[in-house]
Length: 588
Image (cartoon, rainbow, N blue to C red; front, side, top):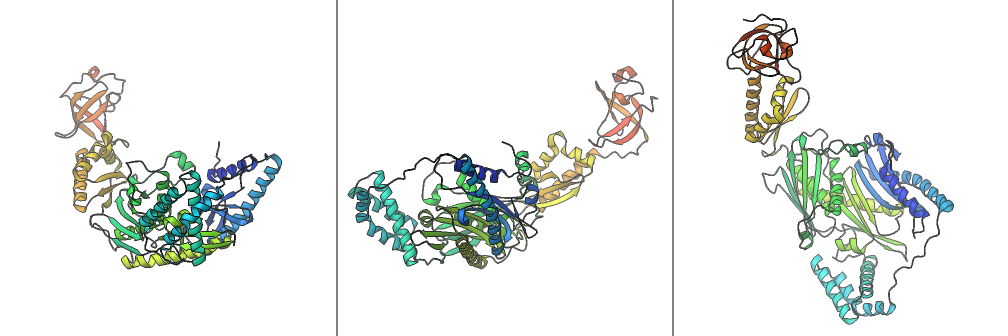
């Protein structure tokens, strides 16, 4: 309803929703508590206000339950070390415990009796019949490492159709088949420590990459990990192309000016589907934002261009957002952007055997391991620390020990991927490509700037149409020229020089008396020429005489008459010359 300057609507909303569910009659296995963790000058800050967050090296949202179990993590940081992340968890849980105690107290004082919840139950006979038909087939499918994503999915689909023919086609049968598939898949992982594609728990899929796909592109790369393939293209643009959020977003703490933007696209053909044109969906926005967080802290602070990185998923079998972080890092280096460190990403999965209280972690998970597993923990970073994380869980939280093990897996995985990327490109290109735009700042006086940008920017638009050079305000004394190449830049500079000279070729001393010829009589003043062939100068009626004059004809003025006037310099706003006859009323 209202947010103060020190308020955090995200954290307030999470905790308010949890508290409302806790006191309601809705069945709820919470409560959960949420905090935002910052890191300022090495000091951990819990729920910092917006002013503090602007100085923070870390922005992490974490939610937890009783017994210090982590439910969700969303992290964005400047290459934060693993040990510091674990310290942040400890400090965060201190505040979460206080929140949970408050919610429990609220439930005791104002909570309603919970409604009874009857979970969905399977028909034991159908469950047994499905197992008889499909158990051995599914085990064979999930242990046959020759399958790829499409052939494995096709084999599972054929097995399900056999079940429908042998048992019956009903929601109960579908649910029984899904439960059986999940149980067999998970038991293979926990019992044999071997995954469905034959890899060990820490083994990566084959990785390959390539840069400079097309020389005319400012930066480009392609990254493939197993059956996940992403192409990335980087474009340099003018600083004015940077994204500026609306005022409300800025008041709520959004970045004032966004010079690096990542566009993530996941077309239907990436998963062998046909789809019609559509807008960006929520999944694409989330994955793109995660990949952007992974990369934005390694971009140089004072980079002269705004950067647009387009990541298109060409094929997907798990962790396309982390592949986008990898291909983005490669494209940035191919373009010659001197990033602080290359960035890579990996997804860590988990299977939880609740009966044995056993957690089995998997590095570089497939799509099916995400679907049938319990966790998708996306971790991105450089050799110096983590830059982004996102934890998605299907169980009621994880203890800190498992999170710590997952972070170690993530760190080892990042180093492995970085090693593969170094084989393709070890460091940023020493210089930009010839296709990269050229930026130059030139001095333009205030009155000349008014001429350059007057008439709704007519002159600026003319320059851009003829040369392709964008002319932009830089500060009170300079304008920035963004040109496709040096030749067009020089053409634009010549055009600007001519436009400015045409408007300022008359050089007069301030206070001097000049003779001018009337070339036009207007309702509100006159236009005069001081020199033949120069642009006329406008004199309003108020400057024609010491007395108030409604029209120049009242003084007997007409076209081709000459008058004497005093030069008063240029108007500081418009840059136009100013003449006054008030102190010299003697006609010639």
